[in-house]
Length: 470
Image (cartoon, rainbow, N blue to C red; front, side, top):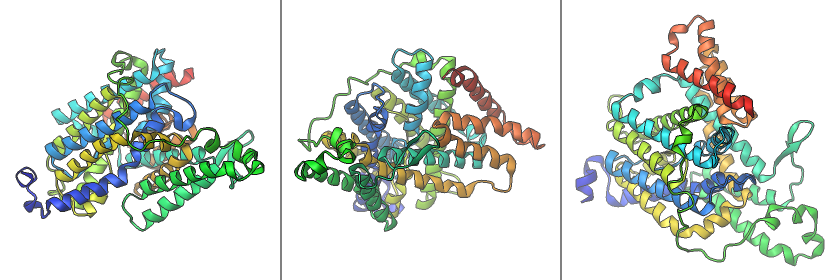
């Protein structure tokens, strides 16, 4: 059956190779199971969004399983999918606040509606073949700047969540000198384990870093009360998140959390308002270019490109779009293709059976929700994943057009604007508004496509009608 569906011999692979490749890919991307509910619920930032942690966990696993299965069976590529890093932070820090300013009763539900609408638009673009026009509307430098800027933002948040970077009234932020605090000890151990294993190309390095940090947190939680009142009552210890918030799970396996709190709760009507139009547009562009970059990169590595073109590209785009629409219905943010799929390709994965294996493993992960809630609910445990993923995204700066200032300056505004404004939407707006204007002033108006003018106009409206009201 597998041979008939996936043509394994034609691709020079076997069932065993594909299964191992799928396991490898799952291990490298499974950190999203811990990170996603912590981000969308607001637990990671100490600012609850109103979304239920358990429901997000279930929605994340189901959306990842569905999208990966579609990619495997319909597009037949060894590329796994799950809610994307970057899109989830945009959801919390830009979409939810914009919905709140628009007067939404449940801002997170309106933000889910924006994800749903962007997914439907992406599906339409994929089916009618308009993706080329959208893809060509943004220059390569801007695409890479977006990824790098989001990487800086994610890493910055990771350092803050760990307690390494703290607020300062004089300089905005500063380094926390209290390196002996339990929170920082847990963070540094997780970061060093994940970074060291990643440097050695060990499968699942980020996951192992999370598990190492989690194991240390459990050990410290059990040990601290027995070290005497002088240590237990020290402000450095007693004021830490380990003491105040970290709760050890009493079970490892349990029934999946209920989807009821988020299932079909997206507010589509609210998402179609003028105030949310820029948010929908940015969600659309983010998932589009995430998918393009990953598909081309992984397919090139796997030798699946044909004369510079990707066969069955439409099917691959459709799987992303359906995953995003389904994810919004279930209660999670934009679903996209994962660059970590390259690790499975390195293990010999060449067909959709690899992606189908990943889908099955996400379903199995549903039954380990107590561990997910324990680790995801304590920020220093997941912070190493944010820092490492952010660092990997930053490598996109090597592709910027350093000699062309009409490209470099807008890219730089995006790159620096996202982390410094603490908003992906604001950082993108700075660069996307400046891009066509600089092209015109530089005497290169012909380089600007009409879609770029449309995006700049939408984002200018976002600044005037949404951002100025904050």
